[in-house]
Length: 303
Image 1 (cartoon, rainbow, N blue to C red):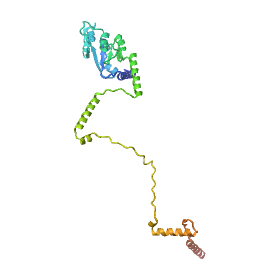
Image 2 (image 1 turned 30 degrees about the horizontal axis):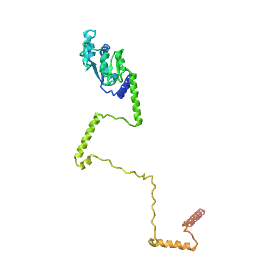
Image 3 (image 1 turned 180 degrees about the vertical axis):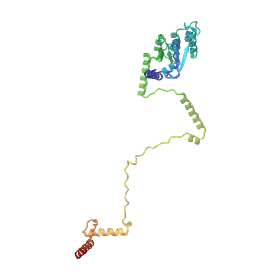
Image 4 (image 1 turned 120 degrees about the vertical axis):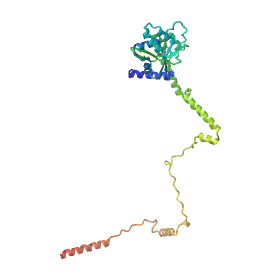
């Protein structure tokens, strides 16, 4: 099977799964002509169906189809392998075994797929048939995947128009429920039911025990209050400097304050000025340098 066709078949089966709840293993109804043609082309019927449907299958055959194999006008040596192969598949009861002659493939499969004539594939069958009349009838039933063999190639038919209409209607309904925000009820999976039963049993055990043990087993959520502002974004409060009273001032500080007050009272200095730095002249160093220079000059003249 080529990659492009295999990808199309996988997407098609995913659509059947989402729209009509198909699940593995797929129940595949096989007719007598399909067994005969696959044997003539030397094809693996079960393996080919699993590759086309991309999943495990459960091959099924009706009693009428087995009786059709018994009535084939071929040598017994070719007929026996076909009958043995058909007997390995699961027998699907069609309630036609009391009749003197088997019904046609169309009548038999139509009574199995849609017994109430409601045009619905209630049991989710996949039909593998070589008869065009059977496939034409199944296209009128919603949600029936059809498989047939053409020139030793197994083909999965695209969705029929009626099936596509049902699929689009379901998708529109899902879209509307999504907009309204009122999803439908979902059935519990068996695993969820088991976990729910276990939780109920645990709650009963906890209620029977003391309150202290119950509080330890069932942890309650801590109530969280409103959050405060980010401390990094809050402006820091300024610290107020303590006021110094006159009685608490030290004597040295008091004397300096008095001096400043007296100077300001004379009128010479209105405000206490800054203390000026006195520049120290290096006159002594200059005299020493001059004496050294004079001595050097005397020595030069004498020499």
